[in-house]
Image (cartoon, rainbow, N blue to C red; front, top):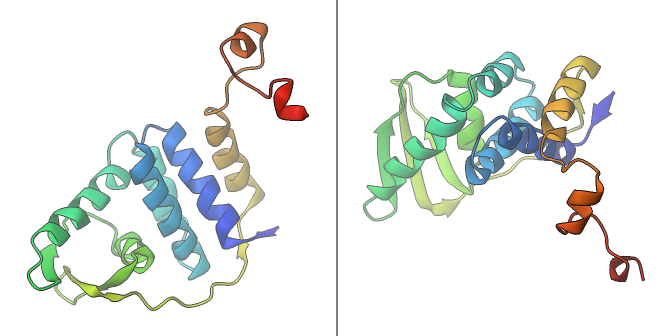
Length: 162
């Protein structure tokens, strides 16, 4: 079944958060997952990244890119990111709000002054197996339905339904 890039991005972010990624890194993973699959890249790198949590590229890659950006001079920065699947790195770079390129030697070049050029991505054909796996992972974020959880504020109260 095909799904929108937005649906896949949100699902991937929730799955990453449930697997142990902090919300900021999970959100970046979700954005990169949408770009990755929307560009027709193989899903293996995404599944491997999720499986590596609470370590691995979902945690390290955004921090590496931030480290490179922090050393920018006049809005331009370059740095090396080691040990990351090149296709996954490319997807993260394409999901950034500013222009970012992966150079031939593995160096990342950032131009913080220039907004990224976005291209429209079509619908994504995600296998039912992967969708179910990510959905089950994301469901771990939900609070179990119980009287105790309602007493502590979970769910809609009476005023929320008015």
